[in-house]
Length: 275
Ligand SMILES: [Zn+2]
Image (tube, rainbow, N blue to C red; front, side, top):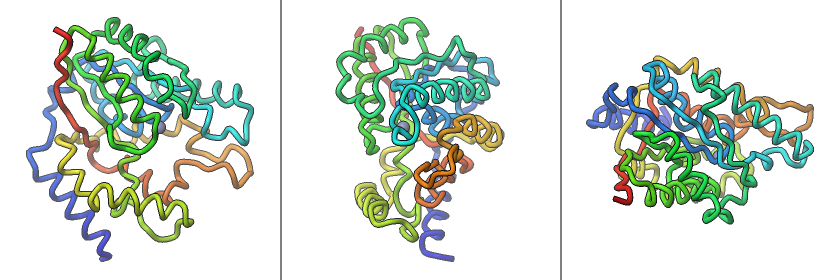
């Protein structure tokens, strides 16, 4: 067994042992899920959404940006935006969330950090409309600027919102570090980014300092996989062009595998509300 496999096994043992597991009572709680891009909802909390919907909880999904950056060099922007919107609706349907519970705020993909102030108001409107018991947002310390901006926008809106809610931060790009992804076989730029993330997560130890709960998703793994496959532009090479990268290409597939482990992990805390 490689040192990397050994360490991942030790990490999993620790996740399983800690009094870390969320009770199934959370499935009954209504939720609003904020995704920076069309695919983050399924990657980060698809297993949670599926089990909430199976329990009959009200769940809404909000997409912050239009997804125009993923393959902008290979497809006209308007066409790509239209694809990603339809894919998001298809994925949500597989997750059990109907079209009338999906919102698109349509900020420009890649530039959400420039729209933080403008975005607070529509997010506050959605909070007032749904009045969710729980809110799901990306993990604050993961690299993409749109992910950090989504967290900041929703947290700013929650400050103005009158009710306390339970906040769950979900990791997406957090997983992009060793030992979860290999340091072998990547091009120089990717290897450099992985090394940087590995250092900033203290060889992955941040998993235990920053995240405090986990959810068993093994009963719904196949359905989560099916939901992710609806994001066709992200999961399949739509053109015979080597430049069309998919999520399978990130760290040679190691990164994508992180979302199909037995548990989703979260950082859970209580927002205080304005009153
Ligand atoms: Zn994203």
